[in-house]
Length: 460
Image (cartoon, rainbow, N blue to C red):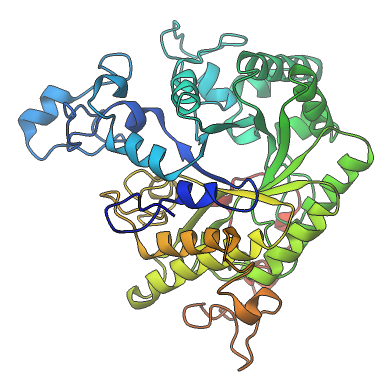
């Protein structure tokens, strides 16, 4: 393999290109850092977003802050005008063979919360008025560099425009259908794989009591896939969810609900082709927040593959700030390596997508807490977990060994000495109080049924 980084070994993209099968190594992308330089980018003009905008670093002096404040994709030259592109773009192109648009293809950003140049009323009622400007920039950039693009996401109640709540069932059904046809149709031939429905399950594996279930009933999931297939018959269509990665453990009921939902869709001939398992892991988590073992993840992928589905890890990041400092890198490296090495041991597994790639730009700091969950540090340097992920990919290159580096943990949660996977860093389960009941120990309870809150608002 060629050395892509001055003596530090090949890039992830280079390793993936030598795997014995097609493996997507993708990352979620934001348009601002992709096309507009951070103030400290070499060769850039130092433009930034507004103060407090998590997409950018602020320059250290007040004069520069005032001069550069308010820069947007519309008001400054894009990365095409910066010599060599932004650092973010350069590293993204070197390390990854695929991208997913992190935020700007969701329904609300397209026609409500990020309206772009279209006139904006208050309150906004922008039914049928779309702005694809930001998403088009990302998609065209990636395609011009030979990268695959995944669309995320057509149906997710959390990022659905609020005006949908005020509509009757017939109007909701028609507007959802129009949204899917409009979005998939706009990118037909460019985006060839879509997360169609996201997080429709509650923690106990039942359907989440979201706006679509209340207005349309459980058939909305099947309808969404059929509409997406009608809009682009050649597109690869995926159902995506969180805390479904392991076949057993504290999230066993949700994992079973995930499998059952997909099995039933396949039995009814619904055009669903793939399963996305998010893998937003908390290395210091307990209860439902506890990371699943490689053996459990592999078993989940295997039974999904037996349904005729391809499976991907769709939004991976690994939070470590709740662990003691001396084991954070050990845990993060082991999780990135072992999870992906185990997944790659299954023929149905076709790739891993990280939810970002540098700790400089991570959603975790906005929705959870300060952390360093990704494989590159804030200066785009390779972390220990980067090498763990790369070694996992190398198990599929010529001379590699499938499941390499896992030893007994590929088939068992314990090694020959009886040590559990992750024993160097995995946190003990707390003793639940009597008032907490089952919810307190992460096994779920009455409050789980129909819970439609996003993961960051749910008790782990």
